[in-house]
Image (cartoon, rainbow, N blue to C red; front, side, top):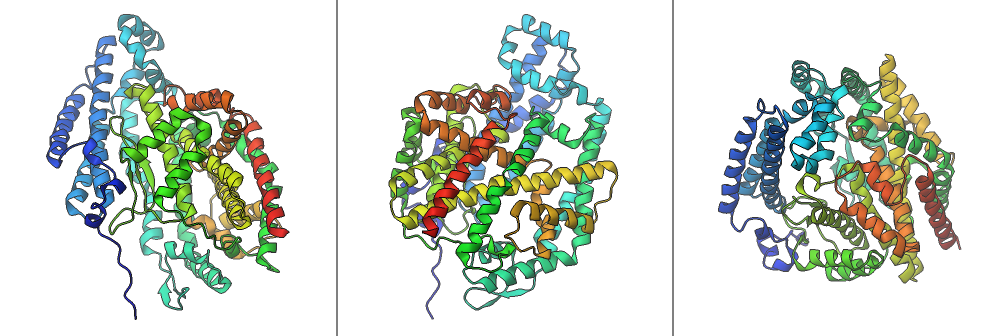
Length: 603
């Protein structure tokens, strides 16, 4: 028997510094971090004493500047600790650092919580006069307006305090779901690819659905949903409780519905959500075509839900190490121009990226940083084309952050989640276009096309399906209709049939999928994945077709941060999310790629 290959340790990784991120750019030593941590605590105490002092323009300006100064340091302290912890989660010293900054961030939030009530306490006329009294407040006008627009939906301080105190109770459904789903739910054993009997887990389930062995896929599917079926009434109860909690908070803050409350919080009209649902429903024939093609390529008389994730293009011989990936990324993103490419080069040259997988390293990938740090990228690199897509995706986030922080003051130096995924997905679209233009091997082209089609299916069609279901649940709960396992399964099952069409044989188990989706507890979050992917598709096509006109518009969006409301920012880049045009263009690209894929794999 051969020994299993062990993961390299963090100490071994750090023998090649060029493959690791350079955190000394933040603090040279841990002692420097400790001093900054203590300074943060002092700033938090100072801010907490300002609550009763905001009486006029001068004191409002002082409070705003003090709060921002506090957060600027807290965020820097947080980034250092979390990066150190993520690179090796088994390191107890940095795990303790990370726990401490989590508490520090909560203290900062509590200390600054007085600002919204303080701004709302002033009348619109009083606030207008403040800009005359203290001209420096003009630098914070959009920030102040963002707080002040909550005036009609903010209760008295006593009422808000009472609702805040009830926060633990109102989030109980989500907490129960997490415990049930992540800890208490147990699955029967299954036989894996090696013939070993193992206990099914959520992670193993995802891998088994990609297996070439159909029996393995089917067994994983039926075993997983057997466990959910046993607890379906409990999961229905937690989900119904979440809908009631969401609706209660919305109505308490004087909104007509929870959808109105959530879109208002981001200053996004409800029409954006409704347009997504309507337009996607109008293009479900494209998803039906793709499902039908999958059935044909797999050679199945019946396509089941457990057949939707197994690869249909076969394995691709396209090994690419990190150095090769860097070259591909730089070529793929050339349409974005020299300024953007210089930023990408900085990622590589200045050690923003932690590349290799090592024992104890946080899984997955991300881009994250603070205003006064570089936007670091965590990878767990494998020499695959998939990892090139991951690199270009996370680089999209990092360049968004770099351009925002290079062009905006601290108060506008970040961007909302509604805009975040557009930048990263646009990069993926440009990489897809580059590969299709440069790769002639039919197997590689089929892989790239299928990668795109599967991504669109999962991000636009599937997330819109979730959004439609979530909206139905909130509306039913608001009407006073009880959401039982039976009613939830009936609606979800019918919705699944509508989305995937007649080529997919209906499995009764899939009607229970609602029970295992954590995003249903995130309150109108998932639709932003679909709008982001669609906007990115439209923007990338504009960049490819007319870079001279569209690249400056795109870079202006990446540079805007939160200096305006998100819909206004993306509209200046050429996407009006209140109209269906950008969605129609995205579906047109999907159809074009589907046609090409179909022709490639059926000839």
